[in-house]
Image (cartoon, rainbow, N blue to C red):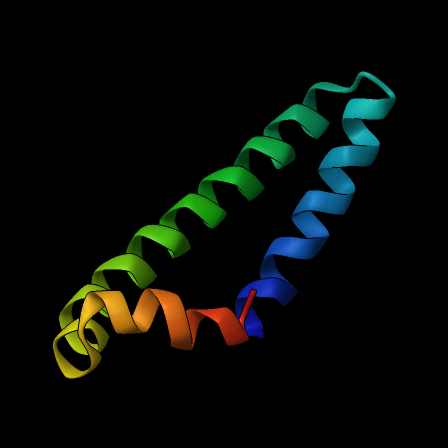
Length: 69
């Protein structure tokens, strides 16, 4: 949840700035994208190291991931 609280203001302010064509809007929008990419990369490696061996990749991505989608 704390990732979302950090990401959402950057995304909203960046969207407003890009709507008005301001350079800082594009910078904030890019920062929000970079934060999201870094978080997703970290979570992918954490899942691969800790979750996949415990459950198995096929079982995890079909049954358990379905609850989050």
